[in-house]
Length: 148
Length: 148
DNA sequence: ATAAAACTTAAAGTTAACTTTAAGTCAAGA
DNA sequence: TCTTGACTTAAAGTTAACTTTAAGTTTTAT
Image 1 (cartoon, chains in turn cyan, yellow, brown, blue):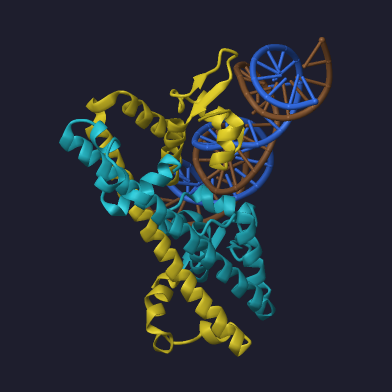
Image 2 (cartoon, rainbow over the protein chains, first blue to last red):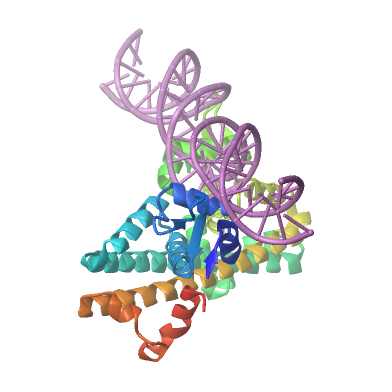
């Protein structure tokens, strides 16, 4: 199957201008053109774009993604480099997840805080609780928030 | 304890210009000034800043964080609104974590792919494997990447 | 008293990743 | 053939969240 830029964009859920921008930035060297100069996307290009999407979600910048693509185009000599890059991004994503978990823990505390405030009619109640009145799961979090 | 903008910035691990920028944008209405016009941060301001930091990590924009701060300054009438906002951000962060987990699953597949390519000396080996030759955990992932 | 360091503001500059615009070309259907 | 919609490029505009600069003021230390 062959696709125009608009069709491929729809498949991916992005704007056509995004794909043109990626192309301009050199991320799509594999995309061919019709005799009239119109981009012709193949099914295998969809796979490339899904990889670009994945790497983007790991926080990689477009220029670094471009480097990865050129490595891949360079064939089997770059397998080690590509593996190293994937492992690096794995580590980066795991760290991001840990940080999000920390953020979620803080939100859990804040939710308990406002639920307690709601029942009491005032934030003074959770705010002025002593540490041992808090659910234990929140004690360390409140300490950190308060810089203790 | 009282702090200058530079001291508070150091505590938080941000640039002093960032705190001045937040102040300019109206996120720090609680920060007071010395007679000479210099910002004087209190310990309680540190707590505000940690909340700003947390909300920022959930993906909230500064203007929305500002609204939250003004709600909080408006006292107990806004407890319900603040609780609703925290719950909304909780949901947003959970969704972000799910998406990161999806990304991590794809990276796990790619890692296996390049490890297999490395052993074989060529990406042709993992690329041309039939679905039942793949570890089952990766079958659905490869299908999705290939648009099948 | 004075020098250095850190503060002040306003305004301009930066960055990444797009998006929009303008002017024009290609392709598909009637 | 002609119209219409989608394509093309180059260039300018957008956005958020800062950062930097410049010119000047306050505070701290000697």
